[in-house]
Length: 374
Ligand SMILES: Nc1ncnc2c1ncn2[C@@H]1O[C@H](COP(=O)(O)OP(=O)(O)OP(=O)(O)O)[C@@H](O)[C@H]1O
Ligand SMILES: [Mg+2]
Image (tube, rainbow, N blue to C red):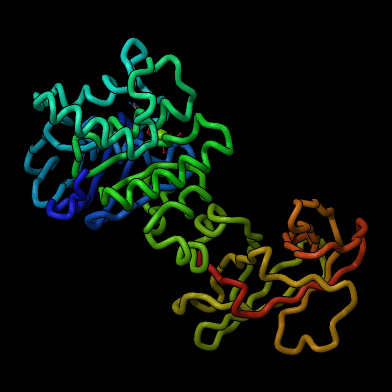
């Protein structure tokens, strides 16, 4: 299969809106996806991922905005343009691997080429090449009913890439597979995508899948994009409390800014249990005002747990708390600590004997706590 480098397969979505009756499924969605890029739409159930994908595919008609594939306008509300799915040259792989049971693996994959009236030798060559790419060439003559779930999903993948579409759309293609197979298929899709170089839009609500697979991740909530960035950036610099909470594990504490210098903020956390408020310093985007209500985000790996009060904690935030519980997770220990009514998760990479209600001391650097606007 030749790579698509010679085809302009950028995807540009601007101001995309889609409503279903009173419900807004997608609101003002904007992105420019580069040729060959792997972009994932990530977000909780009902946030509008599938609807966005279906608008690109031509399975939904937008209520606002434009969609370009390369320099071709495939949908525009304002200009009343709407190309049918078959005229958009897009491949699709969905969650329910819709392979035809009464056909062989070869015929399932060749179908798209036959519909496009390709020649017989061309069909054979391209179908076998697609099957090789997904590692199923040795099963070309087998009936689709006699395949495992993972093999069927590979057939669906081969079928989507066989006619070398400009763009490939994936809607939770791995969610019907067991954990092990899921991981294997995940790696295969990434390898294949890089090898063939097809611009890809992948939908999932699984954050680890998104982080591992993507060049860029689009985090959505309630029909609206919350953040677009590469996986490291989204993890390290979440734009708001929703993103911090959705990507990875974090403890979110509600507080109030009481002072700042540059991007270091002094934050007061009201103590739920009563008594003195907690104070801590955190980094954040400049522009958060004095007295602002904010969230402090603390990643479990950034907090150190001390069983004795550290004597040299001058440049660190120091909080005293009590152990709620610990969970042993193989390579590390996860510990929940109550700090005056605030629950903080900590990851400990060595074995530590901690008992319930034991007093512990948490330390973390200001740069490792994030102050996020609400
Ligand atoms: N055909 C439809 N008719 C009415 N409402 C719809 C239709 N399709 C989607 N919706 C609504 O639009 C919103 C977005 O749905 P969408 O399927 O895009 O979510 P999603 O992010 O893909 O969720 P999931 O992770 O559960 O698949 C939801 O509230 C959903 O109920
Ligand atoms: Mg969906």
